[in-house]
Image (tube, rainbow, N blue to C red; front, side):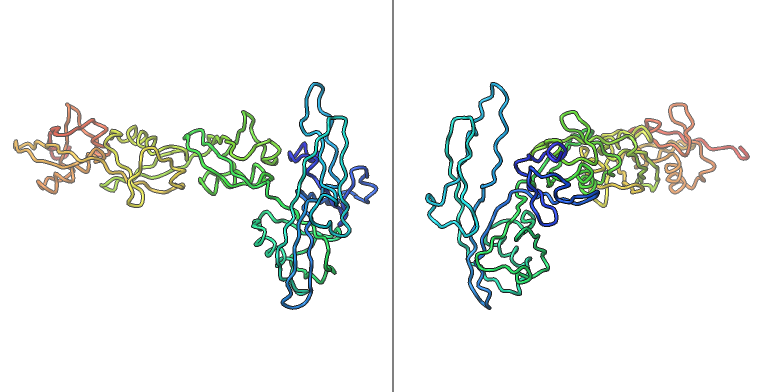
Length: 417
């Protein structure tokens, strides 16, 4: 069941309950395991031998070796399949340079119906280690990590005489003596990196993960990195949507693999855009929209061509290929719109022509205010005509396709009109 759900091969599993290692031939009843009992799954078992001189400032030896005496027989290969893993033999006591520690039996050959071969494994190191009776297990783990070069993240647990050694307890609490055997369980094979490609934008990010992380955990990391809420993400691998409750390993996702993220249509938000004349309008956008997508919406709303728009956020001009998610843009934030300025002409009733420097985001009312400032003609008395059409004060010049050096005619309103 564990292999099926978590993707961890049976041969790599070691299960403990109440400090005892469970044998494959035993039943749950044999071990007194009842409803809601908790089993501990360990992996990559490595036995080390601590030679402890429990005196202040003592120097001690730490030896490590691989105990493969209980290696499982391989499964029978499918018919017609040639299994190259024929037989494993760990060197016996006679073939090793160093004496096998007391209490540890030498392994014997594992015979199979296949042709026989022999491969040898040896890992024997002596590392000086200072240990006191008062040292905590955490201190022992730290020293082992330092001298073996193993990350504390991957050095999960220490066991002695079937008991899990708690970090806060002391060496003396467990009656650890010279020559005692301590089991070290490593997780070095579980931490890796995967890539996540955002389907709407094409951008890809890299995440550091543990293969036992759930899909929901991966979504949380995407949210932390990209600002996309967990509830709006759908993740896919090899065409299959990933379930939040399952682990990465259960989908056989390996290190370096790429999964695909799709954002649901509900990931919309309302943002504000402010022009140089302090006109503000709102846009409904999606987090995966690029700056270019936003400019397209601005053109559709106020008529300013995309090529003439410049969007700024916190005094930084935004590149067209950046997404709002890249910018960690949130609901209600404001973009500043600047557009290339241009010169237009206003022909007044006296025949005089005045020049105005504007941009496409200017409204007709902005132009009327400039006329009032320059000529003293009150806004309420002005009517602006372009292309035979009277211009509405609330609309922008871009809405009327008013371009560089265009001429607008000013007509005065009659009194009472």
